[in-house]
Length: 92
Image 1 (cartoon, rainbow, N blue to C red):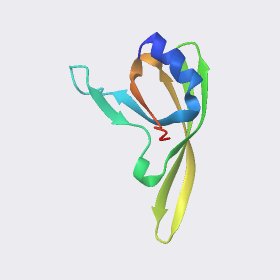
Image 2 (tube, rainbow, N blue to C red):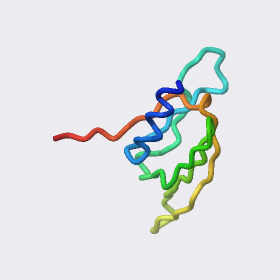
Image 3 (cartoon, rainbow, N blue to C red):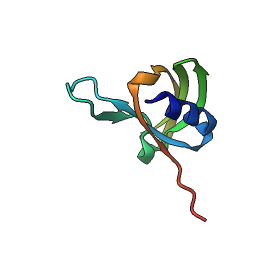
Image 4 (cartoon, one colour):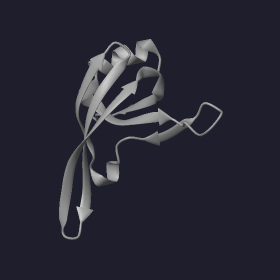
């Protein structure tokens, strides 16, 4: 992620829909996997920026038999590990 996009994301953190990481298994630069499973209604709870590093708190929801299990996942990512950010599109 470029430094300009990194600074823009810090201002638009509340609009984050998904975070895409670079693939660690491919030799070419390609998008790897995404952090938030939109089908399971995962959500970004908090993001704390420290220079080129971000600490994320992600709320994960999984179905267990007849109820939803909710847990928080804590991740630390460097700016260069993030490929792209998908923002919420507002329609007027």
